[in-house]
Image 1 (cartoon, one colour):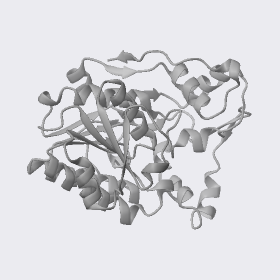
Image 2: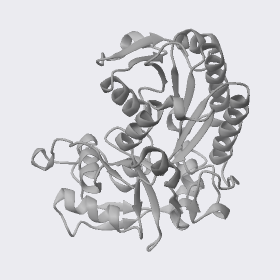
Image 3: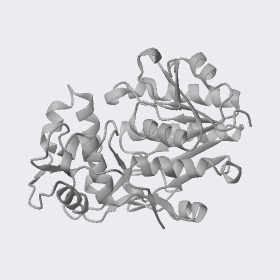
Image 4: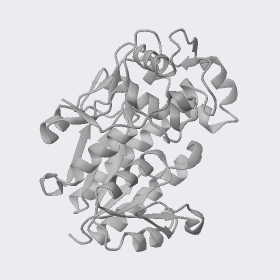
Length: 332
């Protein structure tokens, strides 16, 4: 394998791509990150921005020369044009990995599972997606599995709904809270008493790092689930937000699902949110037994600490409510 300890991160300006870039750099990896306007990207210690477009196969291949890891964390912004952009970008990554000998890392989600696989999701649960985005996610994994038979090694780490200080498009920042100002209320999309699965991005980045640094023990096609933060009845995330902001009576409002069908024809994001309603109505949880058996424990930041860091990053906390992040813990 060539290019030891050098990674190419596609989507380094996004939530999980950014979190993983920072964690790789901290662990001593060299990180390359292509961007269509590399010169305009702010300097980040340890990240080498290179001119390139994930939609151009030759750009991805050139950027991947000499790397041992390709993180495929690139998505069209605002969920636009998923049907025409997502799979071609993945095909370019597969071609680059085949040429360079690198392992592909795909941060996965629960979107490729339909309700028939609930409530307990294992790595081998059937994938019968009920949404367009879920169908694309399932096809991405199918292509990676097929490529692995021809020597393209892949690692997929699936987790629940992302949240974090810079998580991009996600339910926490676009559904539960309003970024940029102190909270006056919480909007919750779930049905009372329904289990929901969350994933704190720094924990996911740490999990992926620990896995890729045991490359020699991974199969050609490796899939793991994270437990993350499991909200048993929909009340735990709400309670954590209230504790962090110091407002135990902060009002909780129902998410306006009725509005989405009216706005969906005009706003892509609302259309995608509407499709994901089943994840807020059907209880589900990720089984991380395989991950714990391999790593010994799953990296885990306590919920209040994760929420505080997230709200601070979103500009929802006063200066006195912020605190410095502490080391990641682990759970079984």
